[in-house]
Image 1 (tube, each protein chain N blue to C red):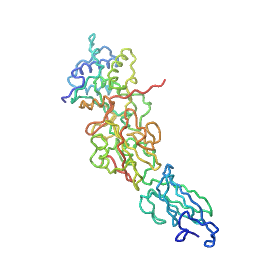
Image 2: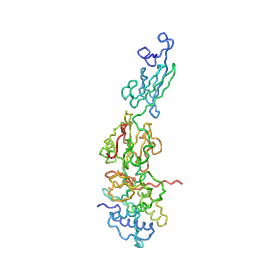
Image 3: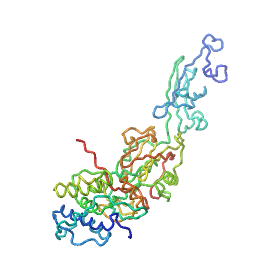
Length: 237
Length: 275
């Protein structure tokens, strides 16, 4: 793939910073991964390991003022007629199930959100948690970013970092429920799988702009319904 | 005996008073008002009402047809039918959708009132229990629901044009309509009049995000099944859907703001999804 993430070369630092956060969540604060990713393709395997709870944090200590300061919390501008890389998780959601168009999954423009979502997916709820549907998946996990709009989506990365620092991080504050995991395209006739799977996808700047604006969008061949973020539930006190 | 037919009294509404008993010793008639409604009870104008062998009238704007003198003391067949559905079948004949028949016996001098409800015989029943259970709920969407095609699908969402081998390719009214017509949907006027052997469905769009279908059931309400979720006959505000054009279609992230139009689906339904 020749396209790159919207963050451009900064995506590497963003990704590593998110792994530092992940290490803190996994009980190894102040550590960084032992190597930096060579390409967008190379992080898919790591995301998969995180989602399957097989990821082992490295023990390389952070340098003072290291990667955590590099977390970007503003959406990068989109260049007209450009093609960008995004990460897709094969998860269905409430709104994806509600749509008439076949589910495509959750789109992550920012690799940092993909890392944190993978970690969230790996946290299997108690087995007595309520089922969402009579479909063949075990129970609800969390994995779709919650945000009021695209700017809020990026700002919330700072909120996650703060919550982790304060020891108050709760996935429910930042992620909505997924209802299952989709079969690999183009095989919608297959049953929902139990396995979360990440992949890279290219998307035009125009479609990505529309996805940013609405949080949902249908595109591709065949056309699929994708979700970038989900509005947080309204809390009544 | 009947005083209708070829006599001077055959015109509806002309009944001689008893003082003219030299010609007819006794006038055995009753007054009859027939009110015709749709399945929801709304009065229907321009519906042909026939008291078999006596007279034919069209209902007025208030849905009524008044017969000032119908034979009393004998069984009368009263038929109500939409006048654009073709000729009235003979007595005992088969009635097509949009027609109904009633049999009544009136007493002399009675002011009778009969209400007749036209049924939409081509329309499917509202049966959420048939759709809202596994495996149907997870293998159908609004399109299969509009096509009344619940069974035999793999998990997922049948798409317009998929069954005919030419699925939709862009999210526009024209393209989704084309694909649905490829599967067998038939364009209908707006609003769609009842069509014997067919029922109306409606297509809407959430621009860039999704399409959605509604169908008119035999209870006169529109129902729909969003994606792999429950079939329902209420809109986004929880109100019964009596008109898909004016129903609340705003589901937040999915706001179906564009009304594309109506189609007819054969009463037997249309097969959707994988060929």
